[in-house]
Image 1 (tube, one colour):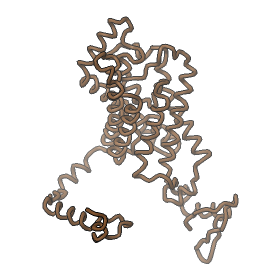
Image 2: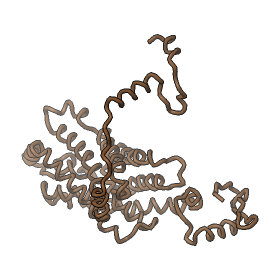
Image 3: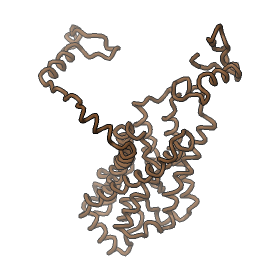
Image 4: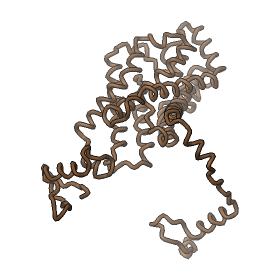
Length: 365
């Protein structure tokens, strides 16, 4: 269509998000020809959903969420390692897999996991996050053990399924690795399809510990910032992709230096690796304890850093994300004591221009 013809096409307010009138009409006609009546919700369905055990739904959501992000991540890694160890595919190894594709596989998998499963369980998908939520945010400690078990179980199932789907290729890979005299457990070897195996020259455990600590702390800070209801830069719609991008960022940055990032991902898949590739996956270079255990204290450190130095609980209350422990009256006592708000006529309160530090506060009064 010529530019002068386009100028004559009637349009509606595009700033309000509306489409061009012609396109809108076409879409409406399309849907009018393909109308599918939605089935009404029956009483039987409502009764069934009400009878489902809450704990079971949460466990399955956590297991499914971990599966959602571990499965594409280890599959992308396996694709790369199989290509690197296959002479026929080596010229195409970069196309079949690299740190770019592995990072995206994990990051997009995390975003999908949050979108699909977080409405049911809250979307922890990491024992360190579950423990941090219990420690800082009041998540029930009684739920922590079965959340963690479910997360490890989800990674375990992802590893089992991968071994089944790549069975023939991995069997050839194993035979070639044994024939070469290197065994099954080494960096870029068969066991590395499932878990992180440090390189031969990575024998300094302190070095590996610090890498894991800072990577996990980085991810923990991003997660905690996304969970802060007072954060004006994150919406519920963007949080899955922001958190996923944090994982992707760390894989791109330190994937070559051996990182784990998640106790459940590593332990669940390491158990599968021990079944198929020998228990050496737990003893090789004494690295497994770093991959499995560092994630929890590092995430607690990162979330504690945020809680002590960056959290603004008054803003959190103002945004409706929390309540004062003594209720509204306790909140007002705090506001008047700190000079943030003053009592007006009757029971009304007026906002002071500044808080005790001379900073403007957006407190709903």
